[in-house]
Amino acid sequence: MTRPVAKTRRVKLRGFERMLTMVDGVSMKIVHAMLVTGNVRALEHFVPLALVRTFNRHPRMRALQVKGTKPLVEIQAPLVLDDVHDKQLLRLRRFPAADSAFATEWPHYAEHECNVGFDRYSQLPFFLTLWVQDDTDQCRLLLFSDHYMSDGQSGMTVLHCILEQVSLLSTHAFSPLESAPVPPEYPLRPSVYDMWLSKSFFVKGSLKLVMASVGKAVYRSEMKKFTPLLPPRSDQHDFVVPPVTNPTSASFAEGSATCMHRSLDTCKAQGVTCGGAIVAAALLALYHAAMQQPQPRCRPGEPFKVAVDVDYNMRHRVPRPAQENQVGAFVAFTDLTRFAAKGIVEMETTRFWDLARSAKREIDVNLEHPAMMAALPVMMDQKLHARVKPSLAKAVNIRYSQTSDVNVSNVGCYPYTKEHLIASTASEQPPGLTVKSVHVYNPNPHLGPSVIMFLTSVESFCYAMAHKCSDDAANALFTAWVAICEHLGQIGPDETLTEVLQHLKL
Image (cartoon, rainbow, N blue to C red):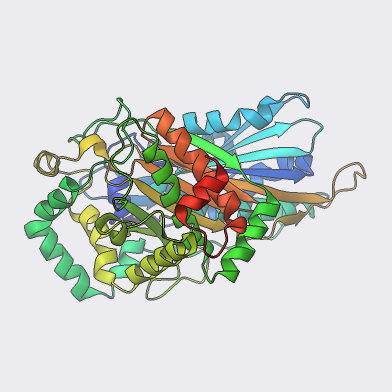
């Protein structure tokens, strides 16, 4: 097959992208696990070409890191069908109809595969695994991606594009597939760091000056204040240069459609976004798990202080947003400082919905302070990258490589159509494909929180958690978080935090 000729294009790695490429062969690898039902036979038949078209539509999916002193990636030429096999972009596993492993083994596979890094110099940052169960009309798509060119929204966009192309190709099944309309390539955009801060010369310049002069001292001061609420596992190493990879464990769960709809209705009635309620649920679950420890750091009657940070999808928060849904690491992070500084003063009297509203206000306030939001990306861009100095690790002394208690990653509702029509003359085949669920998860091999909580939703809430704390603490935390989120629709307007825990009998 003739390979298209394309002009070489290079893009600088900035901010978060630089930190994620700190160590060769080590990746913060994301998995998007999507369950699809329907005409799986057509999906399996058309997915190789659909995958090629998806790679060619989104330029950052074809990025390879350039060796050298400058942090760059080079966008490769558009792919051809042979590349699917040659570059191992598609993997397939079949299960007999009666094999329960199809439903039970994917979390273990996802956790294991996410701990295998990409070779960024030779391996494209995305690949797809299909798990097909014969005679059940079920398929699980596991999309793996390197976080430096991807994020929670990116994976959903890529999976939607694949299904969209499968549907389109099925309508041309009885004519040459080449005649099916080819979607045009989207523009190659700069990193979110440049799109976001390019117009904020004063903010970026001031922060660079601060980081160059006192950045190490500021970071050291913040890290000295932090001690993990939950006991770290014995296999977690302090931050050193070169960084040592710390293992991460995964947990997954799926909720009830009834509970999700009831929860969303209650959030609306209480004037709270789902995001605020999810953060409140995470804080309450952390309190529960921390109090279960033999020597809890928090004591009854004292303010419950917790270091929590959240993700922000920056696609529509940059000065000039792109029209398309971009694939790449278009995220930012910041901490909710109030909960670390003042904490939750009275667990017995604080009402759950007041806490949820407070969390939402804190999330919104951060967006109003660009210097606060930009501090971490500038720190990563200037200090935490492949050329990080050993003196920095020694000076900041980050125990267990943990920087906060929890990150809440509310990826949100699946934003695309859940139904895709499949043209087929076989009457015994279902007429389409239906998206049933999507779970998102990634480990954190170097610096990061003790726990990352991921929430997505399709027909119900889909939960995932990455953790570096003891297994007992992690199990208590994840069980409590899922239970509280599923119970949101039954929490009364005046119900206190301790009353919520009592009602759940955790």
